Each structure stands twice: as structure tokens, then as C-alpha cells.
Length: 192
Image (cartoon, rainbow, N blue to C red; front, top):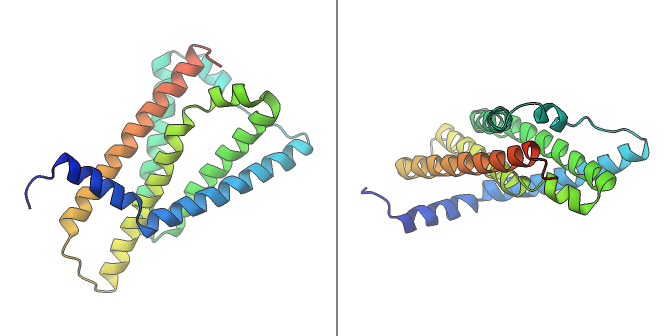
């Protein structure tokens, strides 16, 4: 197999993102997001307020804040991908807990600060949340490959599958990098 063209790469990423594993990841992410919103509303009714890391990061310089945000998200994503070797469940639990905490925080902020402030504070999430969901899809694909191997289903396309997984991992890292730049900039330059 020769080098893949840019169109092949785009097609393979698009196809891999829309696999049944990714559809399951998207559905679970939406469900946990709704649960997080519901939980936040209930907690606010009980006057429980979450602690925000923003004041801590405001005391650091831009690069320290960026480093903290990027590495935290990168290690979480790598952990989810590695958890794919444990057949779905651990990667799902890690991702769902992360999305639950995110949706809880977002809803709490929305109720306390309004739409404009919340939009600015969570602008980076437009990039980070798809990266998290794509990471879960990658993990599910790894689990599927392992299950197929255990069932003795020989797939001759391992090289293509590995290339697709690596390309998707690169996309995740780029998205997390951009999300961390945006989040650190908003924190350090007081843009919200």
C-alpha cells in the first residue's frame, strides 16, 4: 500500500469517526451530558456550589496555565485510549465521568453567570468536547479490534486501521492543543 493522499486521509478520518463505536460514544456522551445538567440543577437547588480552578490558574503565567490544561486533557485522552485495551467499560466510565463533571460545571455556571459569560468561559469546549468523544471512539475501535482478534476474525486491513487510529489520535492532540490555547488565553488575559 502506497502513501495515502490528503483526500484518503480525510475520508478515512470521516469514516472512522462515523463507525458504530463512535456513534455509541456520541450517544453515551449526550446521555451523560443530560444527566450532568439535571444533577447541576438539583445541586443548585440545594445551594451546592462547585469549586473553580480558574482562580488557581490566574496566578500562573500563560505557559504554566496552558501546560496544566493541555497535559491534563492529553493524559485523560491517552488514558481513555489505553483503557480501550480493557474492552469498553473503563474508557466509557472515564469519559462519562469527565463529561458529567463538565456538564455539571457548565450548567452551574450558566445558572449563576448567564449565557454570555458561560459562552466565553466554555468557548474552548467547542474544540475539547469533540476531541473527548473522538478519543472514546478510538478506544472503542481498539476494543473492537481486540475482540475480533479474540474471536479469531482475521482482518487483513490492520495496517489501514492502525493508520486511521494514528491519524485520529493526531486530530485529538491538535484539538486539545487548540482548546488549551483558547482556555489559557481566556484565563490569563481575563477575557471572561
